[in-house]
Amino acid sequence: MVMGLVRDLALPASTAVQQRRPLQVTETAADWLLSFAVVPVLRGEEFLGVIEGGHRAGGEPLEAAEVDTVASFAQQQAAVAIREAEAQQDYTRWKGRFDQGLQEVAFSTVEEEESR
Image (cartoon, rainbow, N blue to C red):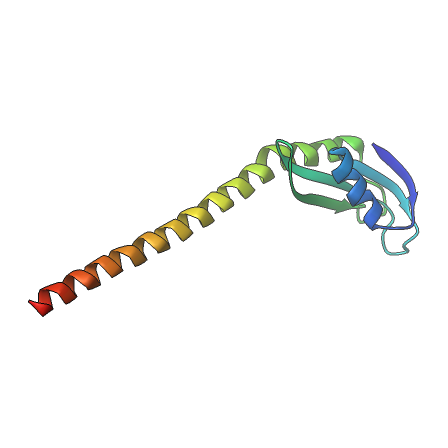
């Protein structure tokens, strides 16, 4: 989807998220940002974040094919990387609890042996 002149720079991100598809902005009211694209990162229907890309160094907007490439990356790579990071955090949390439990069991076993 392509959006023309944008004055509120937060609007495209919220629109891309609501519509669950990439959005290309061809003109902004900001002097420092000529054009940009917003691509939602989704895992199924779950919203994970957005990837935003600005205009090229010469001021030319990104082409539709480039936005499509970013969208493909967002769905195939970014969502998987986020899922793996979440799984690693879950594993690290689980391992910490497991190790703590082992220490508590070992400590109580030592206390029982010392009290005999």
